[in-house]
Length: 371
Ligand SMILES: NC(=O)c1ccc[n+]([C@@H]2O[C@H](COP(=O)([O-])OP(=O)(O)OC[C@H]3O[C@@H](n4cnc5c(N)ncnc54)[C@H](O)[C@@H]3O)[C@@H](O)[C@H]2O)c1
Image (cartoon, rainbow, N blue to C red; front, side):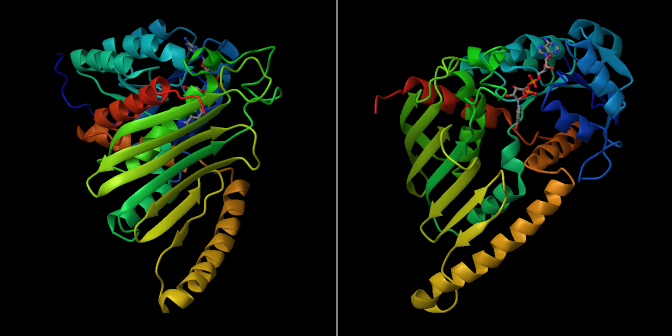
């Protein structure tokens, strides 16, 4: 293993892949973040995309001095401390390997690899190179999720008995980025097709909200209900039963393309209360015993949560107006990651987190059942 001294801040960062999600990473690196200045820890040095126009646009918009279309040239000329790998999933392993071997830490979009054995191999490259590899498990860092996590930790929900994570998105729509038959997304090549691209979010949230649970009973129904033949599957319905420190925990992981409205709901049901949010339109609804005993408690819950919903509506409108949204957790995760890299501390998404999330995706893929 190569031994590297602690870096001197600020670190230099490069972004490879300047498509959709790069807007969030680049706005963070350019200091346009709710967490204030990041220039003490990181400086955007270069961007790279196969498309020269996309790379140039990103460099101009976010003030990157370097602009490349070739990863090798970028690494040789810029020698960045950190590379954000934001390309389609099938390219993550070769690009991340190249970056790690060139001596850069890698912050990679999810899913880093298509399966856990590939992730183990890539982590071995990181270890050999003495560099760090971190996957975006960004929704774990959204305020609603950290608030639910704190409520669980404080015992406000009692013992966690059930977790449900549900994404509903009309991905098969031919007008959308995944459903376009004339320009098929490279994500269709993933083992579970387009839904595979979302599975890290489902599994990482479940593992985050039900820590210490061994998910030994897993059944997953992968279906195609629509007629868009680009899609291997457009629906995932998975049931999991696990053994945790406080007894059995049930979970449901769901991806669906046919219902309204678009949601990303997370519900945690415990022996002492239930918490619920939608990460697309954040709100927090917590139902638990309230003052007034069993007769008044449901009414107090309605009133408290009703005011909470109204406040969320106003807040969400405000965030829409300033174009902030579901990616606040991604900014928080990057903020924590750069602080950790500068201090040589543990990254906010650990290798164990990555291996567990990827391993659970493998289980979903291998435990297919006909329902
Ligand atoms: N964490 C999240 O919430 C979240 C949200 C959206 C996307 N993502 C992930 O981010 C990754 C990228 O998604 P996207 O929506 O931005 O995709 P995109 O198609 O919009 O952008 C990908 C970019 O990478 C470029 N590219 C492809 N191969 C390249 C190469 N070899 N070298 C340089 N550039 C290359 C493409 O030209 C394109 O501009 C995927 O892994 C996706 O799953 C994560």
